[in-house]
Length: 97
Image 1 (cartoon, rainbow, N blue to C red):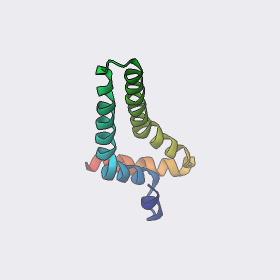
Image 2: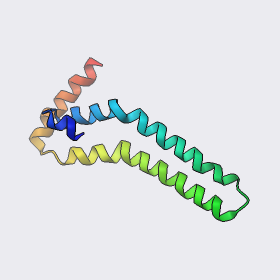
Image 3: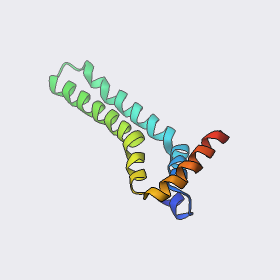
Image 4: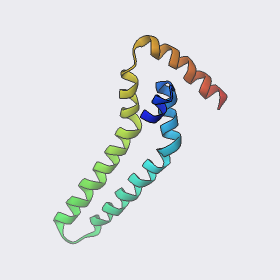
């Protein structure tokens, strides 16, 4: 994000670039780790089951935070005039796709 922002890209373009570059890696890693720790559910040792469920749940919550809340927080840092200009850019970006 910072690299794209330093290249004078807008906040929306920077977020779009991040999702394009690393979005699938974030999703894949989170799912693999959640499934890996979810295997602990089949353990006979109750503390291992609880540990696995807690970590798997934490990974899913972190994924949701990364994909939904973090971009929203980044957009909040922009002032309203910047946001209006970037909204128009985003609409043209999505219209081109």
